[in-house]
Amino acid sequence: MAESAVSLHSANPAKQLVQQDVPEGVLLSPAWKRVAAYFLDVIFIMGLLMLLTRGTFVAWLYSISGLFNSPHIVILHWIILFAIHWLYFKYTGLWMSRSLGQRWFGIALVHHDATPLGPRHWGKRAFAKTKYAIPVFGQLGWGLYDYLRIRREEHHRSSIDENNGTIAAVAWSLPPSTRAMLR
Image (cartoon, rainbow, N blue to C red; front, top):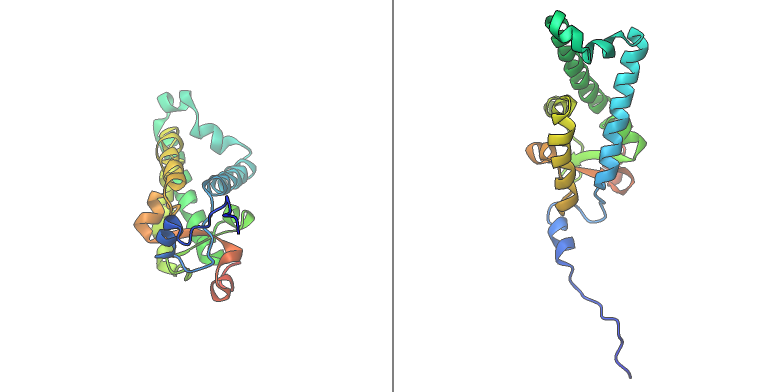
């Protein structure tokens, strides 16, 4: 019999490395979905602030004249924005085990062993995520760094995931017991 031009390798080192921490069958979420989910969350937060304040809140955030004439008001608006980011990510995490953007893209945040996060994890994750709300440096500094890190690593983990011991998985690939915890 003729030798086949296609050879099958029995071992895939990258797959073995990933499976050391992640249970069999759990798929990791790609970087583009995670970024898109975050952008949807920001659009939701800023859209809600625009509607509730008829645009004045966002106008004060980026007011150059306000920065020189009333810096305390501009700083107060930024503090409120960071607080709203923290509250949004903490309480959507507690309520749905993910944010609205992550739900839209079918992403679930879980521990390495694909078990759901407990209530004590969401506040810490949400606080760490507020760094992305810092103008320019938040997105172009930390955001870009984490995006490239997710793309490069075989575990697809951001610095926030690394510090909290979490992974972002495709929700439908999780074990049934974990999927039952998601909303």
